[in-house]
Image 1 (cartoon, helix red, strand yellow):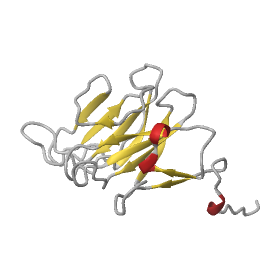
Image 2 (spheres, rainbow, N blue to C red; image 1 turned 60 degrees about the vertical axis):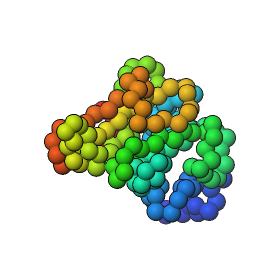
Image 3 (cartoon, rainbow, N blue to C red; image 1 turned 30 degrees about the horizontal axis):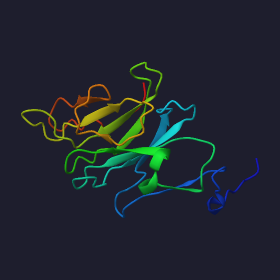
Length: 176
């Protein structure tokens, strides 16, 4: 088998693309996975985890879904996704939410693929269970607005909490 080389500087949107993060130190792309087709347009999408992002609180984390399609430029700028993707924001300081991201398949059987996002340093419960962790299933839909995990919205988000202190639930997520 002959060794083949591919020059990444020659990506043109048809052969692939570069994903440009937003802020230094956010760790854009710490976790990247197929998202399935979460918006139902017939193209598979991509989810990019950014655990050290500061959407409203330090290191709360966020994820970006880049919608699939055939007409793409050579660079995708996460700060300017517009209607070519969506942003999912984290909740609490230091959760490092979005450290682990994946497709969840069509979890709720509505015809749209869903996402699972791990937040292993989350402190859920009352009383609080430090570092028990939490995972979020975000249900796919044709709506491409920002998804805010702080909104308790059982129609669009399902939260799964770790049971014990230091469970670090959400340290690994995957579709079934």
